[in-house]
Every structure is written in C-alpha cells, then in structure tokens.
Picture 1 (spheres, rainbow, N blue to C red):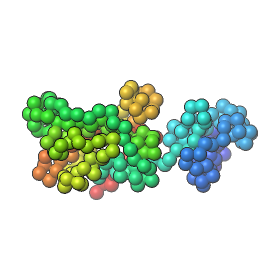
Picture 2 (cartoon, rainbow, N blue to C red):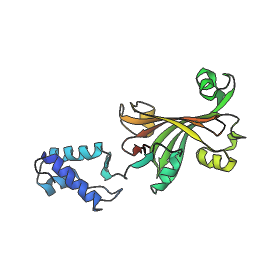
Picture 3 (spheres, one colour):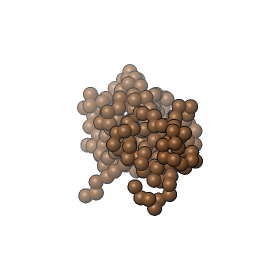
Picture 4 (cartoon, rainbow, N blue to C red):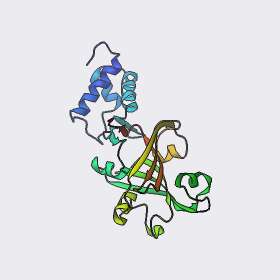
Length: 236
C-alpha cells in the first residue's frame, strides 16, 4: 500500500487485497460503511469514496437497499475470434440464458440490403435479446441474418437457443468476421436492459460475419458493460 496516496485510495487498495486473497468472495456483501469506518478508523465519507472507486472499476457492485457486494471478475473477450457471448459466459462458470425482446422477419430495406447484398424487398430475420449470466445482464444483442439462412427459423426459441449452436447443428460455418469496437454512452432502453446508469459508457461491438463463399450470414450490434467485459486482441 502506498502511504503517499490519499487515504480513501489506501483503503480501496486494502479492500482490493482482501478480495484478491479471497477474504471477500464473489457474490459476498462486504461490511457496511459504518463497519468499515470503525475498522479503519476513518469517517464514512472516506469509506464511501473508497467504495466508489472500486465500484467504478467494476470490482464491487452496489445493490440498493442491501449493500455492496463483490463482482465476478471481468470476462476477457478475444477481439480477434469468431465466438458468441455464450461460450465466454460458460468459460467463466456462469449459466447462460436469454431474455428475448423481439424476434421476427422484415424486409431488408435500404440499410440491410447493402449489408447483405440483397434486394431491399428480400427478407431478413432479426433477434433482439439480452444475454444473461447467472441471471445478470451481460450483453444486449441486435442480430440480423438472411431469412433463408436457417430453414424454419421461427421454430427456434431464442430464449433458449444460441445462434452458434444452430450453426453447428446445420453445418453453417462462420469464416470471416469484421469487427468494430466503440465506446458509446447508452440511454433508455439499452441502459435499462443492461441495468446500467443513464449515459454510462459501454462497449458497442459491430460484427459482419461471412461464410467461405463470402456471403454475409450475420450482422450483429451488441452492447456490453465495461464493468463486466474486457476486449483484447493479439497483434501479429
């Protein structure tokens, strides 16, 4: 601990060390502001600033009316691979599920006709849903695919199925993925669905996926909280 740092940063570092050592475990509520104030012999304002610092980094999460608990470590999502959110959640030991907002077909229109290289009157299928890990929202997905890509697509319950599982089942092989990552501020409804504050900065990942024949098979725009994800890439 650096004694030259402000007191609240020193206390934040002490709490961080306790989390790293397993004294405060994932999902466990840490002591209250009053208890921490007594423990470290400082006023509650100092404790509040220390906790705010750890909340900003995503190490702690506040639960209104209950206290502040230890957050699960961020998911490190490789920026240079073709892999959906579900495998990452599973790798982190989370149980994935989906909250379906909308699914259905529509005419491609000008925007999607250019993305999929089809006529505007041709149909696409869209899925809007929230990806959950152990019931907590991690990613909001806006997925569009050609309507004829998956036979009888309406039979699939997208509260249950991941697209990657359907691709595997049908022998559809995503081959190339053009990814663009931006940091944007979200407002309603994205902020509500992700359970983050209005105007909070989140990751917005746009993906255009093609198969071996260079056909665009999926276009996805997703929003993920920076408190739960890290994106990384290997430069070659």
